[in-house]
Image (cartoon, rainbow, N blue to C red; front, side):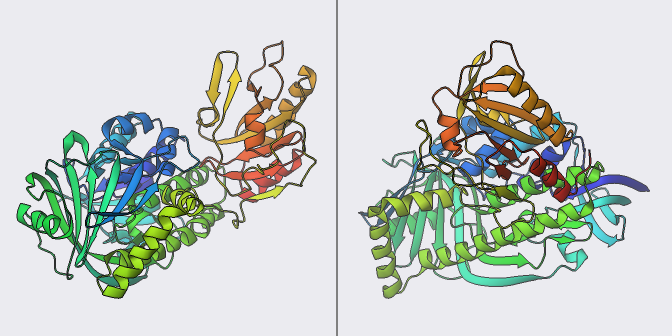
Length: 541
């Protein structure tokens, strides 16, 4: 039997599901398969950072995720009973200044529900056996749980199938690998600890670390490093109790083990993220130690970068070359994540006297430096990720004279940086900019400064729509009151907060990409660069 699919996603974990949702809401319903079972409850990943919560908010899922998880605000470090440092994870420029502790299976459940609402059918017990790529598509051999074989002809094959990716292996994409020789056990237990449940707690002992995280239902997740790279295959209560007793002042009488696992920290990075019509995302492209909690979040952000680009290509609105930007933008990001996680893991698990003293000194110093804490908090929340060097973004922005109402300290997000959320007003009341930008597609935000003349605003809107050429919506934000005549897409910024947050001194344009990065900005009402942007994108009306 031979079937066809515009896009075939292999892997129905967080990365594959985010990509499926993003494609489906842009009119491309992908086929998605997974070799596992629908009731599988793997729970290694436990943290959703600020940037990923913003992504989930764009998909309409952030509030549901927060209701199912435990919001965390600080990260505490100890050596025995001595507190070494406290990191404030709320010091991030985000509408979600927190880190959400939620089991991976709960995140997957939310994403599955949303994908199914959009018409995506997840095929469990289906695996990729082999594939042959051609110029115009990929011929894929599939194996079903009941022993059936199938051939699927797909335009695009996406490998989101984890560190042991069959897509990557059958495509012959090589990767750089390293064994950190660090073993870990993790599991969820019940225990009576007098710890504040709005934070992570990390304890360093002579032989390694123990990190504990509050989980839903009153449970605690324990992550403990082992003295060697041979952790028990199925850790039991005695294993967790022993490490808690040895490395922390906490009560070691743990009980009611809900789930446990073990692993040896290894890292890998694929040499490329795109090979013709085959693309890799998530752990299939990059994997590393769980220290820092970046793995699942980085994978979901891969999908968020890829989704809108792939949708434009599949629907014939952009050239295939647009997908080269996926690798160009994401590979440096994932390389930095792998390198940083490797260094952090080695520093956190070092057991020599020199390593322990250096770690203690660094943490105490870090705990006293607010600017360092703020930068680390933004890095932890993935808010420092940018695409400023991408060929897809550019700006025509000049230092203009400050106005009486302007905050000269704010320069606004540059092209290639994340948008900033702010509240403006329409006739119904206050509305968050992130919700205005939620509709799939590009968004052109015209900051009108002091211009309130209805005829001028209307003329600008017409020109803006012509420049957008059907690629998205236009929004006008004026510092004055709303025009007397109702106008669609016009908002008031009466306290100048939006203009200040975006560094606007005079009428200016911000073109926002679908993944909520600035594609272009210009400090004049010149719409020609907007048209240039879409030409550079290879996009067609």
